Structures are given as C-alpha cells and as structure tokens.
Length: 88
Image (cartoon, rainbow, N blue to C red; front, side, top):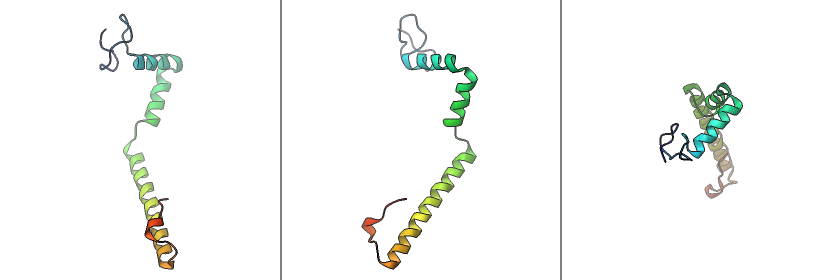
C-alpha cells in the first residue's frame, strides 16, 4: 500500500485509496460539515494566538498568588501545617 496523501506518514487504508483511516475520517467530516466550518472550529479550538496565551498565563499566575495568599493567612493563624496545603 502507498503513503497517505494527507498526513504523509501512515499507509493508506486500501490498495486504491489515497488516505489512511484517520485522514479518511477527517475527509468525511469535512464533506459532512463543510470546509469553512471545520477550519473555523480548528482555529477556535486548537490554534492559540499570543493574546489568548498571555491571558491564560495571567490567569494561572493570579490563581497561584491567591492560593499562596490563602496559605499564608492560614499559617499566620496557625490552623494549617504545610503538608495539608492544597492547590486551588
């Protein structure tokens, strides 16, 4: 069998086919939902631009700071030892 025309890695799923099993499924999905819709979903879900990545980093830093602040407040009150600290 030949190499898949889409991914160029896997073998085709049949002797006269052009795609492997996974790429053949992607091809059927594109035919079912349309090229524009599939590309739109891929761009919204899988592709992360710099602004979204920066926003995610800021959210994670804020969570970590809040978690540490809570731990420090509890330590000052003497209610929690360091082994019981859980991440938020």
